[in-house]
Length: 130
Image 1 (spheres, rainbow, N blue to C red):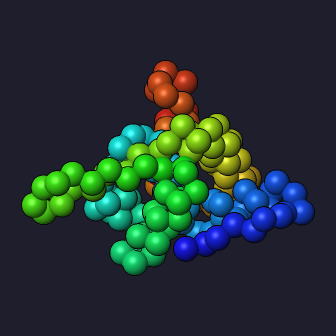
Image 2: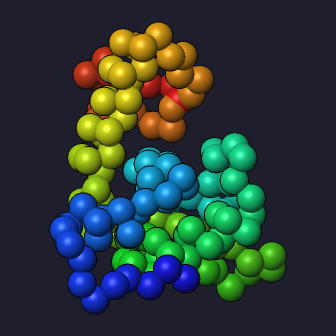
């Protein structure tokens, strides 16, 4: 597990330690839609290995950004959802998505798919297939 330092030069450095890397922001973005099972997250993140998804989920849970609920069933049922602390990142993630869309358009980069919509309602017309 990634342990955090006791001291950082600035808050951006801390933020990058908590949510940095290829997968954590994408996992959080997927969980914006609500509760997901491991297999749902795995399917929505092409290219991530089971081992990497497990590691990233554990780190996000350790840092208090997601909750993991295990149901005593056979086979075991495990669900993940964003905590209140994790939900505080949603506005930032939306802005990152908008920035990426604008950048892609400006540089003629084709976007293949998106994981959710910008807003909680679809009336804004900003719904994106990701």
